[in-house]
Length: 123
Length: 107
Image 1 (cartoon, each protein chain N blue to C red):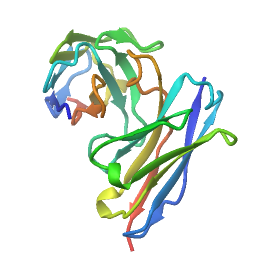
Image 2: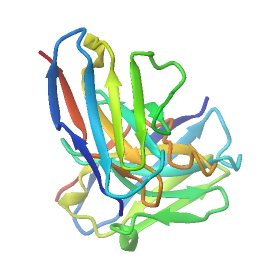
Image 3: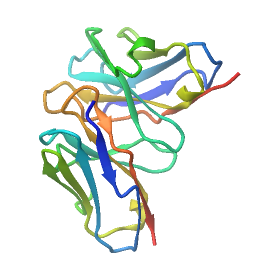
Image 4: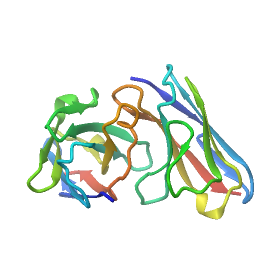
Protein backbone atom coordinates (compact mmCIF):
# COMPACT_ATOMS: atom_id res chain seq x y z
CA UNK A 1 0.00 0.00 0.00
CA UNK A 2 1.49 3.30 -1.12
CA UNK A 3 2.05 5.90 1.60
CA UNK A 4 2.88 9.56 1.12
CA UNK A 5 4.66 12.01 3.41
CA UNK A 6 5.10 15.74 2.87
CA UNK A 7 8.12 17.67 4.12
CA UNK A 8 9.48 21.18 3.87
CA UNK A 9 9.69 24.55 5.62
CA UNK A 10 6.67 25.57 7.64
CA UNK A 11 7.36 29.28 7.24
CA UNK A 12 8.06 31.17 4.02
CA UNK A 13 8.51 34.91 3.59
CA UNK A 14 6.31 36.87 1.20
CA UNK A 15 7.61 37.05 -2.39
CA UNK A 16 9.80 33.99 -1.84
CA UNK A 17 9.38 30.47 -3.21
CA UNK A 18 7.57 27.74 -1.29
CA UNK A 19 9.24 24.34 -1.72
CA UNK A 20 7.78 21.04 -0.56
CA UNK A 21 8.66 17.40 -1.14
CA UNK A 22 6.47 14.32 -1.04
CA UNK A 23 8.20 11.01 -0.30
CA UNK A 24 6.52 7.88 -1.60
CA UNK A 25 6.90 4.61 0.30
CA UNK A 26 5.45 1.17 -0.25
CA UNK A 27 5.69 1.48 -4.00
CA UNK A 28 7.76 2.92 -6.81
CA UNK A 29 7.07 6.39 -8.13
CA UNK A 30 8.32 5.03 -11.46
CA UNK A 31 5.67 2.33 -11.70
CA UNK A 32 3.86 4.20 -14.43
CA UNK A 33 0.47 3.53 -12.90
CA UNK A 34 0.01 6.74 -10.95
CA UNK A 35 -0.33 10.47 -11.18
CA UNK A 36 1.20 12.41 -8.31
CA UNK A 37 -0.72 15.51 -7.25
CA UNK A 38 -0.50 18.46 -4.89
CA UNK A 39 -3.66 19.81 -3.24
CA UNK A 40 -3.94 22.63 -0.72
CA UNK A 41 -6.42 23.82 1.89
CA UNK A 42 -6.37 27.24 3.56
CA UNK A 43 -7.42 27.15 7.20
CA UNK A 44 -11.17 26.68 7.52
CA UNK A 45 -11.64 26.59 3.76
CA UNK A 46 -12.06 24.09 0.96
CA UNK A 47 -9.67 22.06 -1.15
CA UNK A 48 -7.83 23.32 -4.24
CA UNK A 49 -5.99 21.07 -6.69
CA UNK A 50 -2.63 22.60 -7.58
CA UNK A 51 -1.30 20.22 -10.19
CA UNK A 52 0.07 16.80 -10.98
CA UNK A 53 3.01 15.00 -12.51
CA UNK A 54 3.41 11.67 -14.23
CA UNK A 55 6.52 9.49 -14.00
CA UNK A 56 7.60 10.68 -17.44
CA UNK A 57 7.75 14.22 -16.10
CA UNK A 58 4.68 15.46 -17.92
CA UNK A 59 2.68 17.92 -15.83
CA UNK A 60 -0.73 19.56 -15.61
CA UNK A 61 -1.39 22.63 -13.49
CA UNK A 62 -4.43 24.46 -12.24
CA UNK A 63 -4.77 27.52 -14.50
CA UNK A 64 -5.31 29.68 -11.41
CA UNK A 65 -1.75 28.93 -10.26
CA UNK A 66 -0.01 27.87 -13.44
CA UNK A 67 2.24 30.90 -13.76
CA UNK A 68 3.76 30.27 -10.32
CA UNK A 69 3.84 26.47 -10.01
CA UNK A 70 6.45 23.88 -10.87
CA UNK A 71 6.07 20.20 -10.02
CA UNK A 72 9.00 17.86 -10.56
CA UNK A 73 9.85 14.23 -9.87
CA UNK A 74 13.03 12.57 -8.61
CA UNK A 75 12.71 8.87 -9.31
CA UNK A 76 16.05 8.07 -7.67
CA UNK A 77 14.70 9.31 -4.34
CA UNK A 78 11.10 8.17 -4.92
CA UNK A 79 9.97 11.75 -4.39
CA UNK A 80 8.10 14.49 -6.17
CA UNK A 81 8.23 18.17 -5.35
CA UNK A 82 6.26 21.40 -5.48
CA UNK A 83 7.62 24.89 -5.98
CA UNK A 84 5.29 27.88 -5.73
CA UNK A 85 6.91 31.22 -6.46
CA UNK A 86 6.09 34.78 -5.40
CA UNK A 87 4.03 33.66 -2.44
CA UNK A 88 1.69 35.90 -0.49
CA UNK A 89 -0.37 35.43 2.66
CA UNK A 90 -3.10 33.95 0.45
CA UNK A 91 -0.84 30.93 -0.13
CA UNK A 92 -0.90 30.06 3.58
CA UNK A 93 -2.47 26.60 3.71
CA UNK A 94 -2.08 22.96 4.54
CA UNK A 95 -0.48 21.33 1.51
CA UNK A 96 -1.25 17.71 0.72
CA UNK A 97 0.30 15.31 -1.74
CA UNK A 98 -1.93 12.61 -3.15
CA UNK A 99 -1.88 9.90 -5.80
CA UNK A 100 -4.37 8.65 -8.34
CA UNK A 101 -4.36 5.89 -10.92
CA UNK A 102 -3.79 6.82 -14.53
CA UNK A 103 -6.88 5.13 -15.97
CA UNK A 104 -9.39 7.26 -17.84
CA UNK A 105 -11.99 6.53 -15.18
CA UNK A 106 -9.70 6.89 -12.17
CA UNK A 107 -7.22 9.69 -12.85
CA UNK A 108 -9.11 11.99 -10.52
CA UNK A 109 -9.74 9.62 -7.63
CA UNK A 110 -7.29 10.79 -4.98
CA UNK A 111 -6.23 7.98 -2.70
CA UNK A 112 -4.06 7.87 -0.69
CA UNK A 113 -3.19 11.29 0.66
CA UNK A 114 -0.27 12.41 2.74
CA UNK A 115 -0.99 13.73 6.23
CA UNK A 116 -0.49 17.32 5.08
CA UNK A 117 1.94 20.03 6.07
CA UNK A 118 1.09 23.57 7.13
CA UNK A 119 2.93 26.34 5.32
CA UNK A 120 2.57 29.87 6.63
CA UNK A 121 3.56 32.84 4.53
CA UNK A 122 4.68 35.62 6.82
CA UNK A 123 7.58 38.00 7.30
CA UNK B 1 -13.63 25.28 -14.75
CA UNK B 2 -16.54 23.16 -13.61
CA UNK B 3 -18.16 24.57 -10.46
CA UNK B 4 -19.36 22.21 -7.74
CA UNK B 5 -22.10 23.41 -5.40
CA UNK B 6 -22.73 21.44 -2.23
CA UNK B 7 -25.67 21.82 0.10
CA UNK B 8 -26.19 22.31 2.89
CA UNK B 9 -22.96 23.95 4.04
CA UNK B 10 -23.62 22.67 7.55
CA UNK B 11 -25.94 20.11 9.03
CA UNK B 12 -26.88 19.05 12.53
CA UNK B 13 -28.41 15.61 13.05
CA UNK B 14 -28.98 13.02 15.74
CA UNK B 15 -27.33 9.62 16.08
CA UNK B 16 -29.32 7.16 14.00
CA UNK B 17 -30.66 9.80 11.61
CA UNK B 18 -30.53 9.47 7.86
CA UNK B 19 -28.35 12.26 6.48
CA UNK B 20 -28.31 13.48 2.89
CA UNK B 21 -25.92 15.90 1.19
CA UNK B 22 -26.32 17.08 -2.37
CA UNK B 23 -23.75 18.20 -4.91
CA UNK B 24 -24.53 19.92 -8.18
CA UNK B 25 -22.10 20.36 -11.06
CA UNK B 26 -22.21 23.36 -13.39
CA UNK B 27 -22.16 21.00 -16.37
CA UNK B 28 -22.59 17.33 -17.15
CA UNK B 29 -19.80 15.33 -15.48
CA UNK B 30 -21.24 11.86 -16.17
CA UNK B 31 -20.41 9.83 -13.03
CA UNK B 32 -16.96 11.33 -12.43
CA UNK B 33 -17.82 12.35 -8.91
CA UNK B 34 -16.15 11.36 -5.63
CA UNK B 35 -17.00 11.92 -1.99
CA UNK B 36 -14.43 12.45 0.78
CA UNK B 37 -14.65 12.65 4.55
CA UNK B 38 -12.31 14.97 6.43
CA UNK B 39 -11.96 14.96 10.19
CA UNK B 40 -10.29 17.90 11.99
CA UNK B 41 -6.54 17.95 11.51
CA UNK B 42 -6.63 15.00 9.13
CA UNK B 43 -6.31 14.50 5.40
CA UNK B 44 -9.44 13.81 3.37
CA UNK B 45 -10.41 10.15 3.10
CA UNK B 46 -12.01 8.69 0.00
CA UNK B 47 -15.43 7.20 0.73
CA UNK B 48 -17.24 6.97 -2.61
CA UNK B 49 -15.80 7.05 -6.13
CA UNK B 50 -17.49 7.33 -9.49
CA UNK B 51 -20.68 8.56 -7.84
CA UNK B 52 -21.81 5.30 -6.29
CA UNK B 53 -18.91 2.94 -5.68
CA UNK B 54 -18.01 2.33 -2.04
CA UNK B 55 -14.29 2.39 -1.37
CA UNK B 56 -12.96 -0.82 0.17
CA UNK B 57 -13.25 -0.83 3.94
CA UNK B 58 -15.81 1.98 4.12
CA UNK B 59 -18.93 1.10 6.12
CA UNK B 60 -22.02 0.28 4.11
CA UNK B 61 -24.06 3.01 5.80
CA UNK B 62 -22.37 5.40 3.37
CA UNK B 63 -23.73 5.53 -0.17
CA UNK B 64 -23.79 7.77 -3.20
CA UNK B 65 -25.97 8.19 -6.26
CA UNK B 66 -26.52 10.41 -9.26
CA UNK B 67 -25.12 11.19 -12.66
CA UNK B 68 -24.90 14.12 -15.00
CA UNK B 69 -25.14 17.23 -12.84
CA UNK B 70 -26.94 16.11 -9.67
CA UNK B 71 -25.50 13.85 -7.01
CA UNK B 72 -26.46 12.69 -3.54
CA UNK B 73 -24.42 11.37 -0.63
CA UNK B 74 -26.26 9.53 2.14
CA UNK B 75 -25.44 8.20 5.58
CA UNK B 76 -28.22 5.76 6.38
CA UNK B 77 -27.80 5.82 10.16
CA UNK B 78 -25.55 8.53 11.56
CA UNK B 79 -22.89 7.37 14.01
CA UNK B 80 -20.86 9.57 16.39
CA UNK B 81 -17.67 8.83 14.45
CA UNK B 82 -19.21 10.29 11.28
CA UNK B 83 -18.76 13.82 12.57
CA UNK B 84 -16.63 15.45 9.90
CA UNK B 85 -16.72 17.67 6.86
CA UNK B 86 -17.70 16.01 3.60
CA UNK B 87 -16.57 17.12 0.15
CA UNK B 88 -17.67 16.20 -3.33
CA UNK B 89 -15.13 16.37 -6.15
CA UNK B 90 -15.46 16.15 -9.92
CA UNK B 91 -12.90 14.82 -12.33
CA UNK B 92 -14.63 15.00 -15.66
CA UNK B 93 -12.22 17.71 -16.76
CA UNK B 94 -8.99 19.29 -15.63
CA UNK B 95 -8.69 20.90 -13.20
CA UNK B 96 -10.47 18.56 -10.80
CA UNK B 97 -12.59 20.61 -8.44
CA UNK B 98 -14.11 20.25 -5.01
CA UNK B 99 -17.35 21.41 -3.50
CA UNK B 100 -17.14 23.86 -0.62
CA UNK B 101 -17.83 21.15 1.94
CA UNK B 102 -20.63 20.18 4.30
CA UNK B 103 -19.87 20.29 8.00
CA UNK B 104 -21.80 17.59 9.84
CA UNK B 105 -22.47 17.93 13.57
CA UNK B 106 -24.28 15.85 16.15
CA UNK B 107 -27.46 17.40 17.52
